[in-house]
Length: 273
Image 1 (cartoon, rainbow, N blue to C red):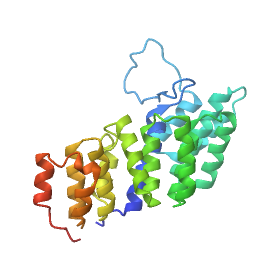
Image 2 (image 1 turned 30 degrees about the vertical axis):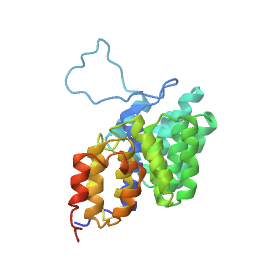
Image 3 (image 1 turned 60 degrees about the vertical axis):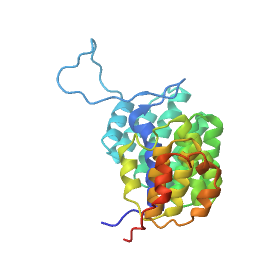
Image 4 (image 1 turned 120 degrees about the vertical axis):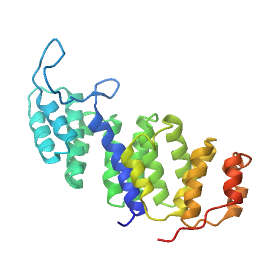
């Protein structure tokens, strides 16, 4: 089986980060999220039973990855009369994610823009618009939408990770490191908490530069184990610029640690596919 390319990894990363919000949570009016309905087996333990709303049924379709059914059901929910503006914005955004999951980027963008019509300060549709352009490799456009999302919610690790990945594709490596660092400060486990991401990272095609900058981001934060792990992968993929390591201020922070010293003393031989 061939290993995934850099662009495939980045697309998967951004897609996962975007979708986690929809699949695991439903936005509320104040804090942005309450838990989506969960499938139950047997007799419910809650004192009161209630039928799923149309929107909850759509969320359930999303959780099951039945995206066409989810999109149709979100549409039904939007046709209900008297919806509050924020709920309407939420439904349009979730409809956009369902359409995006089907790779229908044009209709997804229309849905996200409809969400913003009802709530201009809603950061998720801005982020998701960026993702639709990222998936089509329109990185410059993508970055602008991610930046707008961060302006509205600078505390989202996902938004920073998305922008960092876009900056990497635009060869803005220093900016990418800053965004990765911001993401890791907000959520130290952002790369490890989602199994799908880890799998893609470990199976992607050789790209020593990418792993070098990822290691640099961890070194900047003093996270030696992760920095050494990704730097080792960079060596395995063909990284050879030892001088840049010696002169780099981020790697200097961990240059005296035993793990780093051992790696530099005995770097692994590049692995050829």
